[in-house]
Amino acid sequence: MIGYDYLLQSGHNWQKAAIEKQEMWFAASEVIWLRSWQMMTGRMSPAEATKMVLEKPLAFAQAAQDAGEAVISGSDPVEIARAAVAPLRKEARENASRLRN
Image 1 (cartoon, rainbow, N blue to C red):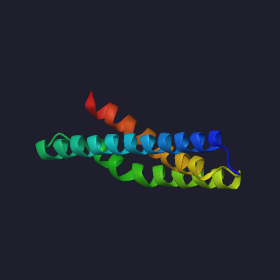
Image 2 (cartoon, one colour):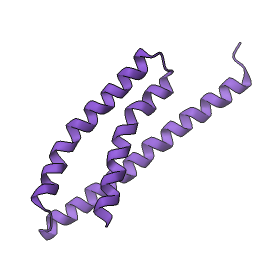
Image 3 (cartoon, rainbow, N blue to C red):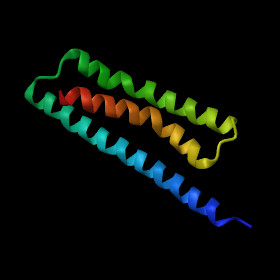
Image 4 (tube, rainbow, N blue to C red):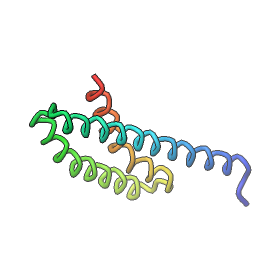
């Protein structure tokens, strides 16, 4: 039988994973908006345009690697999901912060 504490902790872990995913989406939306603004106003540098294209394969490769390592180490599904989102979230938040300034 599954205990009440286990169910509570599991729900909390999934909620934490969902919040982290939403943080990633909010940051990504902000980055899209800021980069679109730069393109519209002609202020996007060639370096930023290159970063915009090249960062995605690297971030997704890192996400796949981290999720794979979590699977191999026997992590539960929520930890696998969090491992997959972490590099994408980190990259999106760093971009948003950098572009804001």
